Amino acid sequence: MQRFAYPVTLTPDKADGGFVVTCRDVPEVVTQGETIEEALLEAEGALEAAIEMRIEDGLDIPAPSAKKKSEHLAGLPVGTAMKAALYLAMREQNVSKAELARRLGLDEKEARRMLDPKHGTKVPALERALHALGKRIELMVV
Image 1: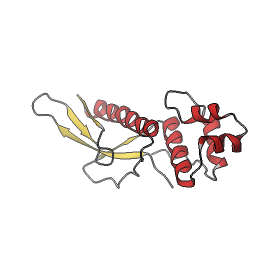
Image 2: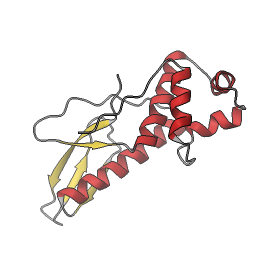
Image 3: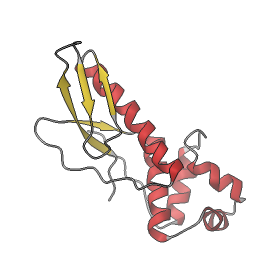
Image 4: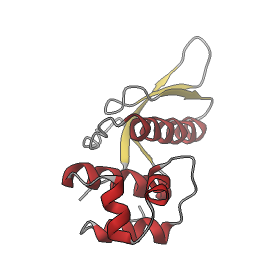
């Protein structure tokens, strides 16, 4: 099972006010916000950008650590989480975009767009691609 909610630390910024946000699992996530709510919203945006960059660059996406008492959780939007899950499943199974396209009856360009963070791939298409790799989606609301 893969999760895409990462623990983040909110540190009060004594000099400028508000909070500085960091993520120990994804160290490039550093942002800030004036309130806790704003800081968490910014954290989710920074996390999304970092995961998208990792997909584009062919880098690993770490699993989230267990949340510590002093931490908050920042999650990915559903579409980005599904793209990350597809990306990880393809890497795990050594499936190329061409092979994914063949399994789905698509041309390679369409399969490539599925992983493109800037392309608004629809959730049913991502779900179908994950099913083609033997994965299923389970949504949990907390």
